[in-house]
Image 1 (cartoon, rainbow, N blue to C red):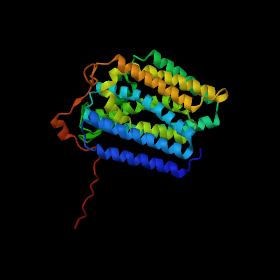
Image 2: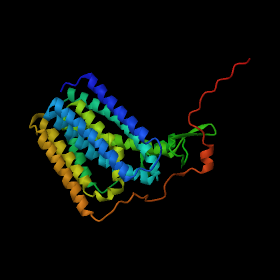
Image 3: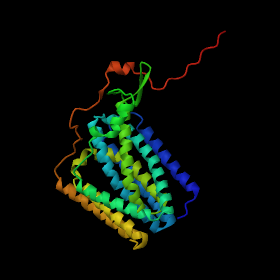
Image 4: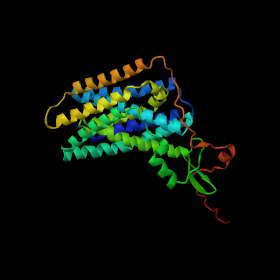
Length: 342
């Protein structure tokens, strides 16, 4: 698959434009409702499918199917991200109107880190083809572990990242609107929102360790790996606001994701030297697994309604008082130059 350099820059340009559009549309802090989240989710899915159709028409059915297989894998594994974000936001009692800004910057960082991981993975696979066996074994073991531990969730209170952040970064214990940094008595302080952003970023890096090898199982093309990742990630924020109040209903989805990881791990192990499973078959298996998992989940929990995740204990942070907001100075001060004497 010969992709000219200008195509890479064109895709990056489109992604930047889409991020700017999203940022402008949500520049004011507000609670994102189901209707708005559904509209944005449809928009991002249409963008992802439209790009896949473009790949199909320009490079043929095989590469088009590889893109869609990778996009579906990344989109489905991203649902696990949504569940983790819901737990984090619930534990820290992050006001819903501030959550979009955290996720916007988190997704922006995720695009950068995943780009680095994809570039590194492509180089390793090109130089050491045997590393595919390691990736395959990792995916199979991860899938089995996910299936066995599907009812366990992360505990933000025990997060090593949070402990290190609070130890090394001076911070306040109160939210100050959407601000990540404030200045008090001349001292620069982080707000809890910055700690939440760091935790969101770290969890996405952890998830990327699973998802990047998984997509390399269905395509070896770095361009398809990156674009499938990018278009799947761009819709994560809208997906979160659409599904965060429904996580209790997807009881079998994690088992389905585990089976997908095992399947792509087996496919990767076989394609090295033994047998190549056609992309059409792989895509059909992934769609079948996810469809069965979602359908079974919704049938098992029918009658249950939307409910926002609720904190299990006392939130570690609070909202700043009006006096604290009034005395919190801007994080970045403009340098004042002395006026020349006359």
